[in-house]
Length: 68
Image (cartoon, rainbow, N blue to C red; front, side, top):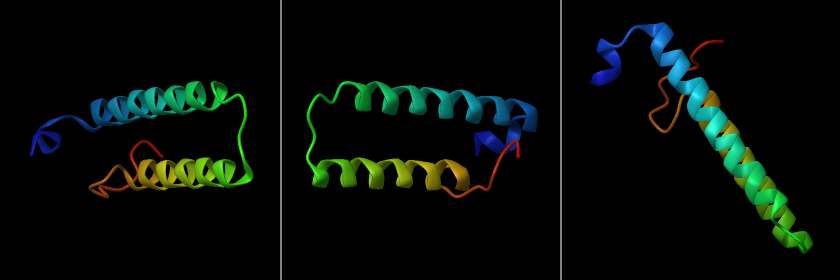
């Protein structure tokens, strides 16, 4: 596994950068919504919650929190 060979400060920096890219993408997507139903807003909220949980776990692999 590549992450096992990388120094922890680098892994933390990569996760921080990736989280920033994801956050920017989500904000760009949400900002582009002109009109939205209640169901649509609920779905966006669920999507955001899912991303927050995955990032908090350290990604899909659940490697744990990095840099916290």
